[in-house]
Length: 62
Length: 403
Image 1 (cartoon, each protein chain N blue to C red):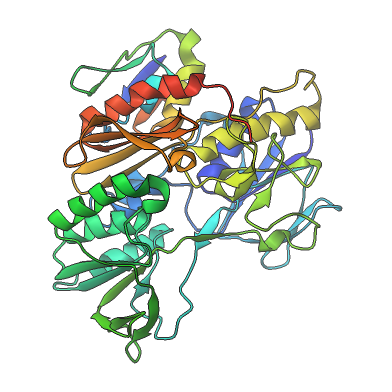
Image 2: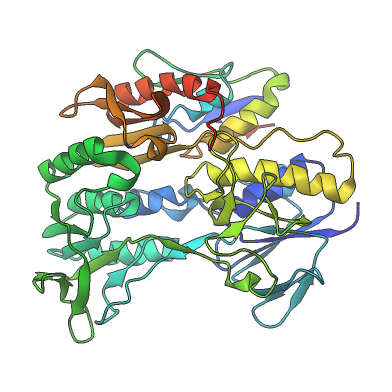
């Protein structure tokens, strides 16, 4: 699975971190970092993360 | 699988309902009916980036999941009546849609002030068309702006407006402080100070008696008879549930659509409600049914409602679903700061404590009931929002409050 976050939209709300902590994290400055090719077993939580992003900045490709 | 689920409402709640119906295993037909001409879009930027001219429509549109590529969209159409006993929904123009399952997702509309005066020049912010119309008015140089109502939308619009080339922005509210209902006095006072430091003016503790002007608003008349000159008025005085189309079916529609803990309506397993029109009990708190106008609620309610509805329609719902207990969360971006909340601060307004920082800078407030933390609100920059997030786990672990 390929995950793309539009970093021009992201405003570091961190809702994705709650939904999919294995894929999304906030660094010590509070900025988003993420795994762009997570295991397919994490699809449900990545979909959840995409749903709850207030900026709708997370896209799942394939 | 045969049969059709009609989703009345094609905004975020309607879209999430359709996606979650698919996720719950519904492979039959789905028809969404929405009164706006647009595909579902994200509303929070309407009072901020859209007004500031920083977000074109394409950037607001949701990307529907692939699973709903085959659903039928009836856009620019309104559900005007329903006969739940006969399982039909009537659209404007007379067409009736028969359904096996129905999802109520018709949302809210802005409440309007009924006091006398002209209508032209008075705006609300709910739809894209509203926001585009308001932006046009706000970008006329030298506009004098009066915002009636110091809640979420009023405060956000005021903050955005002072960043534009307007002459002045004045917020009017009968309460003594902005957003004092959801925030309580301590943070509301800090919020007021921040707005004033950034150029927003306030007339608090007064309502609006009427509007001056012949065809277009030229002023706002306050309770004491004084007049605040205005070229642009924004009415942000709450909202009204779009439930009239459900009248005549014996439902409790006193404030939105009353549901049970599975979001079912009127004891009918084939009818559910989602989003801010649903008045549902939250097992996390006191079980009192409430409508919740937070952005996260359409997604939370759609999941629960879709599972229950699909289990009823196709069977296989042997296991009782977990109690519905979403953790409320809201945010609001104003000027250069953010309000970020987790839990239910409104249930702990009588016991507010500063958990971190101080009211003049970045501050994190905790709201308590019976000595127990029930909600947190951060006001400030990213650091304090992260601090709020650290309390989220604690709030999630709390046992249910009992009535």
